[in-house]
Image (tube, rainbow, N blue to C red):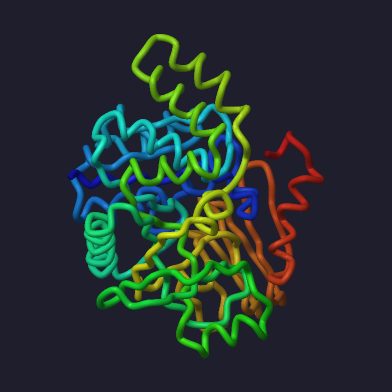
Length: 353
């Protein structure tokens, strides 16, 4: 039974505007040590899987950029979505395509926009997840991040019966809680952050999708059947946009009867907005974090400064700001307003997407 990993790289990353754009989403931005988040995700998996067992599903329009970022990945390991239809369909499409190659295979689903360390520990835990999926072929396996604080912006997984060291039955999934509830979850020791990473047999996830999203699975199987033919793009382009747009959590994970969780005691940072950089980058003596190669700060404190080029950013007497420069736009906002960037982008319209 072969193990394969699929990286979902279809997100747009609107909250990382103005660097993240439709043609170059956040997973392709080279913000950390000159390396993209997608590249980092691939390299984590490549510590224990060869390139031919690593796949990526992303927007078809981004495949050329992904190929340039990951030239060692076989071209046939790139699956292009004609349009975004959320994670249930991305997972289902990858599963249907891999099931043709190996009907008994196990696939892992991994994210392209997280920073996870240490990599060695990540590899050990994911390898354990593949083993759990092999031992429990009818179950879905998720990875639960050991929480470090009462986070209100993440979903949670409550563990139940212990199966073996670090592996439990899932009692239930919980949506993003308020501060009081999140603190109760943390203090109970029974909850993990929902990582959005999974392992299962392709046959098992396709069966679950058939139970809970039958119309989509029929369409995805038709796409898979046509994948190697000359009509692939036409078939995918006709069917994929008609599929119900829904996440894998809502479509399957919260409804499935057999779900196991593998504890992932790693540092896990979701780079979903500019303030997340405070958890990634080392601050200077005044609390500023920066990706800049060219800056000049005077009496400036607790700011986040970002640019991919060598454009000079100078700041005097400001505190708690996010300042992001791109070739055609500059963003300035307070830390606490960074979640409203999506609202701002909607106001700007398509010319700055």
